[in-house]
Image (tube, rainbow, N blue to C red; front, side, top):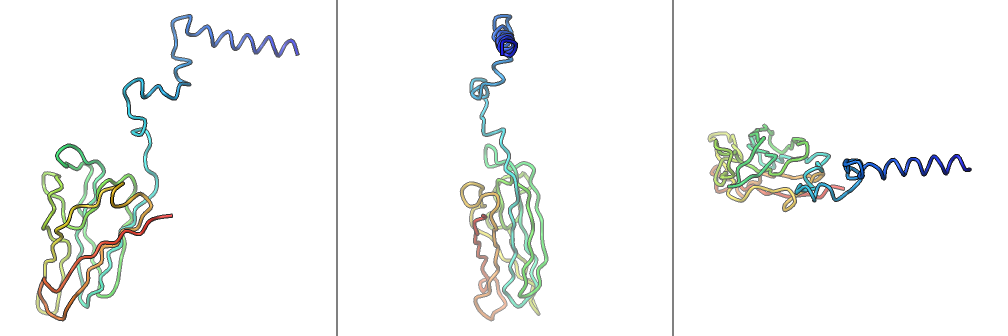
Length: 182
C-alpha cells in the first residue's frame, strides 16, 4: 500500500511540477476551455457525419433532366466553396436519388452561378422533353440551407408535377419537401 501511495504522489508531483518548470502545456491540454481561450470556435472542430439524400421525383408523363447543386461553405456575400452542379435524368413516373456526403451547407434545384454566388433564382431546375417541345422549368425560390431547411440525415425530395395537359412551362411546378432523418 505504501509503495502505491508513493508512486501516486510521485506522479502527482511530476504533473504539478510541469507548470512550475514553465511548461503549462501539459495541464492545458486537459482543459476543455482551451479552444475558447485561444479564440477558436469549438464547433468548428466538429464535422457533420452522414449523408443527405436528394430524391428527384418525376410525376409527369415525360422524361425530365433535373439540375441541382450542392456547396460546403457559404461565406461572405453568399459565396459558396467546394460547390458542384449536377444533373440527373429521370424517366416519366419514376424517381432517382443522389447521395450527398455531409457536411453540405447548401442544396438547391437549378445551377450555381459562375462566380459561385447563390444567385440561382430563375435558373433552369428541370428540362421536360415532351412529345413536341423541350420545356425549361425554372426555380425561383431561395436555396436550401443546412440548419434552417434541412439537417444531415434528412431526405430532400424535388418533385416535378404537371398541373394540366398542356405543353408549356406554366403547366409544371417544382415541389420541395424535406423529410427529417432519424
